[in-house]
Image 1 (cartoon, helix red, strand yellow):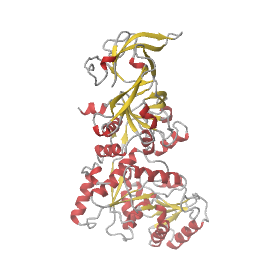
Image 2 (cartoon, one colour; image 1 turned 90 degrees about the vertical axis):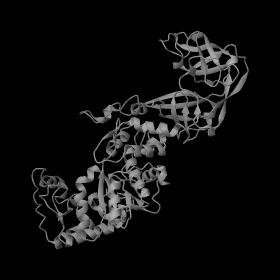
Image 3 (cartoon, one colour; image 1 turned 45 degrees about the vertical axis):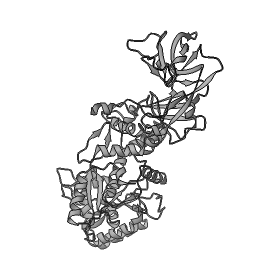
Image 4 (tube, one colour; image 1 turned 60 degrees about the vertical axis):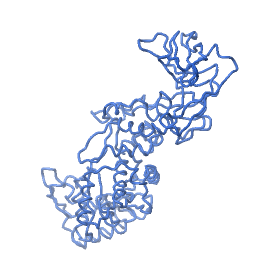
Length: 558
């Protein structure tokens, strides 16, 4: 991808890189990495990190690695590895030949741990997880030494090798760094480096029964890959001293990578925790990780969001040190901005109401021309069939309209877009009093583009002809959570799922939409932007509404 295709704005991270380049610290080399844990699908927050890491490398003519943090096999699956690679590629980024896994370094990480033990910087501890937590102390009180902290290097080395050999049960022992139990930073109070865990690993199988912690594997993996700037989210700021300690303690890495933290992305009406997204899937509140209501990249892709819109969104929100919440309306605005000049504009009736044009000759039909997008003449035109029987939206007719209602009413007139002016003459109801049909007349001298098209009426509505109409399923989406902050209060967040977040309709579309395939995006005139779902079949498409036409963010900006 060309750098010009990515909205890159100068930020405090780039200021740091500029200073490093000016000093020659890394020989003007910039090498970043995106290190996801394969324990779920990526979401819009990860998109910000992807754009930042890959975009920064592109800006400086550097490189960015994709490295999976697969150090916790109890939660990791190959399915997640595959989905993450697909998401990064879909967003438009390429790691080329630089695909890595933390598991690539399991042997080296183990050897380095032995060096730490031999140098007196690590020890095997028999305390339980709860005991370690109690011994750690608090923010106002120092911790106390483990009773096993004074073991000799020889004893620690023997125990660590026996841990690796599988002699001890899960949780019986851990390897801890020997740093400072009185440190004001709790992460430096002898943190755990290795734990015993008998879990099948998606790449190494059952070769290992001990696994490194992320805080230990992360800095060393960075150093071995030649990373210069390790860009993390803000929750890792307190872990930076441990990152530095792991690289500095044996003095092997000069110049070593530098960790830089930025604020993670928070979006209104959305939960961004993988654990909570997994709960939505496992509790059946959504149809899967790629449910179009999910903030996952795969869900946004299925819904019809474009990679360009997401990159634009990530560029607009910027990079900062302080946490903030971004209005979901900005993301929707970026989608509209991207699709506006690109999407063909076609007609579909979501809740059909039948119209019979009583003065239109029976058995006659005609093809009417219409432009595909007035913002993009290159898309050209298409033709639509027109005949005696049509369908309009139920909402486009009112028997007893309020003031300033400019759509169809008894005795009133509207223009059918790209067609004729019609007048409602009769309302037909069923035995229950429900309106089932309108009898109308059309004015043959008002054909759009014709000599009589100058006659004006206040309302224009969309329509489809009964002859040639394509039955389709249309899915309308609303926020999965109706609250701006779904995690406020004590109530379980699952109980806050919006029961009306999905509405499915049996709709009718003009013939041009019958051939829609997955990946096709359209504007349904007066309805919004829609995308063909993977469940579409020839002649029976399924459409997901990407976003409506109303742009609240643009109004806010004005």
